[in-house]
Length: 104
Image 1 (cartoon, rainbow, N blue to C red):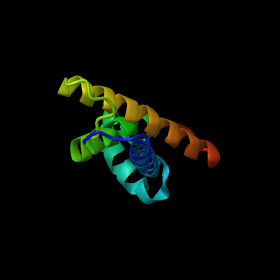
Image 2: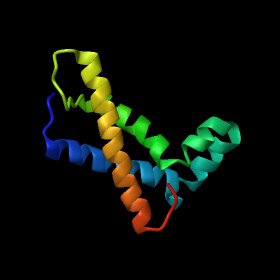
Image 3: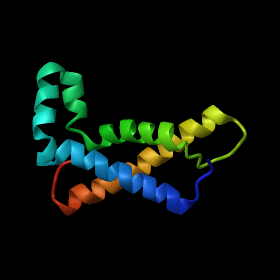
Image 4: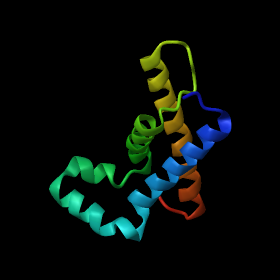
């Protein structure tokens, strides 16, 4: 599905907010602790809003299939859309974290 700028921003805000919620909120403290005890790699992932944004936006890509570009080459368009939305989601996450004086 081709996406306009407003749709891209909505998806990025949703992904960025979800990323911050998972990596920084008290709601997910026990989940983060459980994961960190079992895997250092995943523990790091669940403490990094930027890192988490990549995976959340991947789920967004797989679910909504937003294409920010339409060059006729499906996979390159998907990858570019994934990376662009990840960048936007990370900016949203950074703004939220800065507003609450938390670490990215």
